[in-house]
Image (cartoon, rainbow, N blue to C red):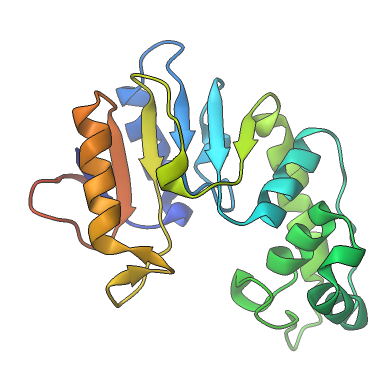
Length: 204
């Protein structure tokens, strides 16, 4: 088991570590795929999972050729936020993260004093990622429910927190799950601030 310090914005450092550990044609699995920052740097075969079904719907749509809008008004943002079922799931996922303050799920309409178009920026990021997610598999499940094929390379970047939970993920359960995957023969890497002593730090 290996522990990597840092977040997904350090993709240029994390991806090479994962690539070096990966065997030819080995399945790459991310149980918490999020914004796909690391996922896009890895070749197929690969499987991205996230508990948020709207986020997965967005990545599936981008993979299949959907182009997100380049402009989202605050009025539309609020309409989508409170009437999710009235809009395509991919659009809900895009707006919920890409047009929100700090990228937090419907954490408030993103704006700044310079009039930055956050939807346009998020659209550009998504479309740039599209070629790298072509052919990828996506699911929306609890990470513990994933039936991961033998000898897959697993990378986890769980939601972090200062308490005993990772954004709803129980810390002790998560590390126990990691140990089980390791015992099953999966090489497993985790990004985080701290880790139990039986994990080896390979990148700070």
